Structure formats: C-alpha cells, structure tokens
Image (tube, rainbow, N blue to C red; front, side):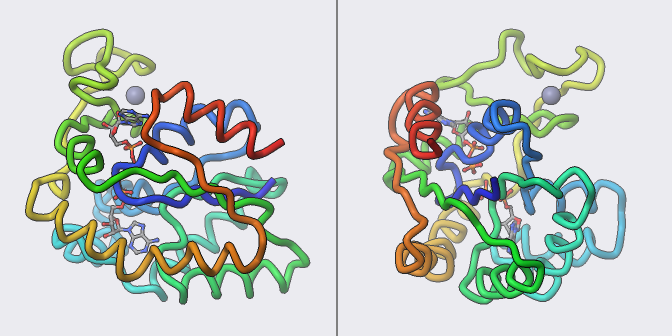
Length: 216
Ligand code: ADP
Ligand code: ADP
Ligand code: ZN
C-alpha cells in the first residue's frame, strides 16, 4: 500500500508512522528526516535545505521532489511506503502523481490527521526527538521512560534533543506555511476520492486505531 500521512506540523504524523510501518510492513519515509540526515552528514543537499528549514519555509519543490522520487525508487519501497511530510504543496502532489502514473502505480490512501492550532503549538513546544531513530517524544503527553533518552535505542546513542525549528517564532511561520501551501492538498485528494480525515486530538492509541480502521 502507498499511503500519505497529511497534517500540520505537530499533528502526530511521525509518532503514528513509527508504529504503522511495523503493522503494514512498509518503510516510513519522512522528507524532514531525510533533510536532517543530509544536514548531519554535511552534504550539499543538507546545507541547501538548512536555510529554508531554519526559517520554517518549504525547501524548493524541485530539490524536494528529486530527493523523494529517489527514495521511493529504493528496493525497500517497491511494495509500498508511508509518506510523512510529503507532499507539502500542489506542485509536489502533481509531480508525485505524474511519476507514479509513469510506473502504473498510484497512491492508495491519504490520511489527514486533524488537530487544532492551539494543540499543535502545545505539542511542538514540548517535542523531543531521538538523534538516532528520530522517534518523537513529548515532555507531558508522551514522556520517555528515562529522562532525555529514547525508549527504543541504546542508552549510548538514544539522546533526545529539541529541534531548532520548534522555537515559538519558527512554529508560527510553519503553521502559516501549512495553511497557505499544504492545506490545499485536502481538496486535491478529496477530489480524487482517497482522503479520510482522522481526529488527531485523541490519545495516541486511539488515533492509531482510527488510522488502521481507515486502511481496512
Ligand atoms: P508531526 O510528525 O506531525 O510533526 P509528531 O509525531 O512529531 O508530529 O508529534 C508532535 C508532538 O506531539 C510530539 O512531541 C509527540 O510526542 C506529541 N504527540 C503525538 N501524538 C500525540 C497525541 N495523540 N496526543 C498528544 N501528544 C501527541
Ligand atoms: P514537521 O514536524 O513540521 O512535520 P518536518 O520534519 O516534516 O516537520 O519538516 C521540517 C522542515 O523540513 C520543514 O519546515 C521544511 O523546511 C522541510 N521540509 C520537510 N518536508 C518538506 C517538503 N515536502 N517540502 C518542502 N520542505 C520540506
Ligand atoms: Zn531512538
């Protein structure tokens, strides 16, 4: 199955994808994670993306689309994947549709994780992420078992950190960018008849159950 998780920054896409991938046996592909990995390796792609990410703006479509199409061409994505954070603009959605069409493939389902703006701000301001596996935690809503350490990784390399772009000023900018550039995708995929909206403002387990039910 080829699935898109759509939703604002902080809606819980990464949290859900991290367990859905096991359930569906499909890789979790997050363009934000790919950019951060490129940056930590100091590649030209990472350095180019950094200036946009620091401001909370979208990395240009051509760069992002090229990176994503390369990733979904890897062998582990041959039978499907869960996209998290892509597409984020109409141009990206159209480029993905074109590329899939040329391979006789299509997106099976778009799951919109719907969360109010006040709750998004609360979630992003308390978010801590594992440096190794990128799993998100939350100081109040979803704390790690041990302070500052990832539940799944080794104590040595599971250090949690706060993303620079989760600062309040940048968060406001990112939410504006979501409304302007990404929210139009809701109509785009509704028109294709493949979008299901899920109430993302429930316990993590209940959101997961609703997502799985929508995939049946
Ligand atoms: P996204 O990938 O959509 O930006 P994340 O999965 O990183 O969102 O979640 C943002 C923050 O909200 C994290 O700190 C995460 O622990 C927390 N979170 C995720 N889902 C829920 C939920 N259902 N209820 C409360 N907090 C949540
Ligand atoms: P979020 O928690 O907001 O969902 P992500 O990790 O998905 O954050 O994205 C972080 C940043 O990476 C974005 O603010 C943007 O600068 C860049 N980025 C990620 N995905 C895309 C995309 N599909 N198109 C353009 N920029 C992207
Ligand atoms: Zn980890």
